[in-house]
Length: 564
Image (cartoon, rainbow, N blue to C red; front, top):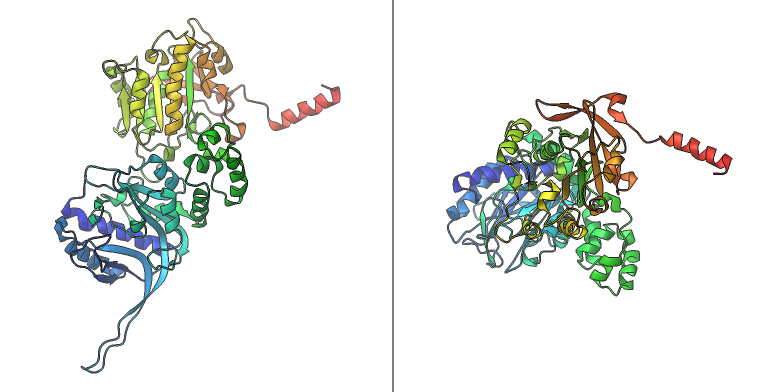
């Protein structure tokens, strides 16, 4: 939805206030400018050659200039561009006599507290998720431009700097801007250095582009006041060298996303990494099949729930009936679907803080057994304020002749899916759960989705009839169906009842131990009123904890002495 004309002034004021605050955060005060080009390429303006300087106190005057020259949104739009670089001003002398002219004011560029880039998808080009991912991984903000019905027509990119950035030679941008454009990898060279304000349309030689809302770049609620904006800037300021290094690596790896993801952004590693790429004849598919992960690959391993639920992998929750596994999975989806306020503490799931910064996008919950009455009843308990607005429910009917695997491919079009729950697995199999081929087909569909979308896929699965595990590891051998249910998940969370308590722990874990996986079994009491599992405090809440490093060292020393 585009910004209504009557709100344009307030939207632009909000954007300019944020930019001024970013400049001031690195000690810059002075003047920015609004302008139109002298020529009609690449922006078409009814009034070419306009130049309007303003300081922070004159922001309201600048906004009025923008609204005036915007022509009320009617074509041709004579839209003013912004030069975000802060300038100092030397006031020219006033003429003493009527036959003399005033000396012009002189503006000298100082620098900028932000780096930016404009990357527009031209012609039939389509914005890829990979472009956005690479930008956000730098802790830089980006969200799409619109062009007509196309709501993914490029990226508006803004990063906050931890120190002022100097202007580059062309005077149109600062250090770091070009690098952001390169990393986005959207070919629109003629627009790269321009700063297009949000909320208004820009008539270009390639169509009419608009970035509707400046606030869409950032987490919800952060622009509401000066203090919130300041915290956003402080929490997300980057050293621009990070962008320079990333762009160097991106260009060195010839814009191959898979190489960039595997090798990372350390420029010191480029030469050695390219040697290996050359050994596989510079064939990206061969490299993907045989290439090593980059040295700091653990930094790429992300979690929805640290220590329990990884992104880009399949996690299985195995438990007997009555342990509350469906409620637990539903609660996780609800928690991940809330847009939390700035500074709001993340909720806990099985005692671990939810990584809310990794929970952007649509969460998908396949409910194969519980219908709307139960789902709605649980939601009313878990989400009393109705904040879980990014949760998509799916049942078992995907349309005539459409299989689960085919429907999964449909879901690939969703840009970001942080978590997907399939509850239970057997409702979405195309045959017998004891048939390895049937179960493998199911896993192939969800693993492909997990990897390509970097989604945390959680499967809820039952145990064998009459199963009575006494520890989480025992759950692994008691899972119903084919051995595939044991082999394919990266993580298996086991749940079982112990009298009035519920015990939860990792039955299987193929995650490196240095990533902080939860290794103990935890003991919970179930509150029937809110269906929540309450972790028992202190020693009572931990069972079968692993040996400490000191205990392992003593055992190792004893083994040496005895020759074992």
